[in-house]
Image 1: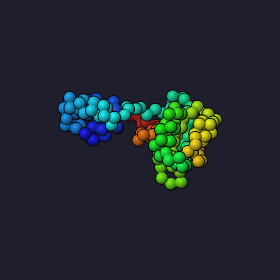
Image 2: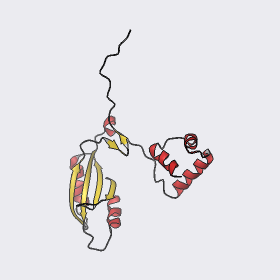
Image 3: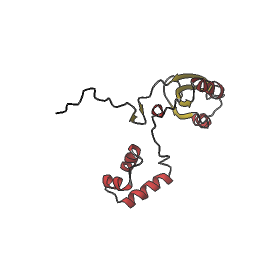
Image 4: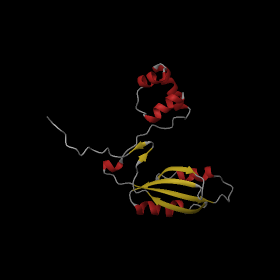
Length: 159
């Protein structure tokens, strides 16, 4: 079953016949297993990785590190669930090191992201401190490189 997941993770648009060929299962077995994985919540969502710079949208991303005070006997899961409710938050991770949580936040401007952090995140009771790192450029996202392929500068030789 993991091989089906690996294939779908690499290419969610791969059709059932190709997955069946790659795994040795029948198309019906693949369809049934994928349905089970969707129903059980193993497959949460199918996603596209979009190069927004190419579209001309200029979103601002920031990685926000949070130091959390768990003094009120709530765990990290509770504060993570609270923060996850904000649409600006694209990901939340519990991390090791000097900080406890790492968020990825998206906004339309640096000012919008800064105000979101100052007004919505930093004001939460459990948040002790924040550090904001604005993303200047993304080279790889979800395993997909966003580099432009270099075009050859050599002139074609024609006979």
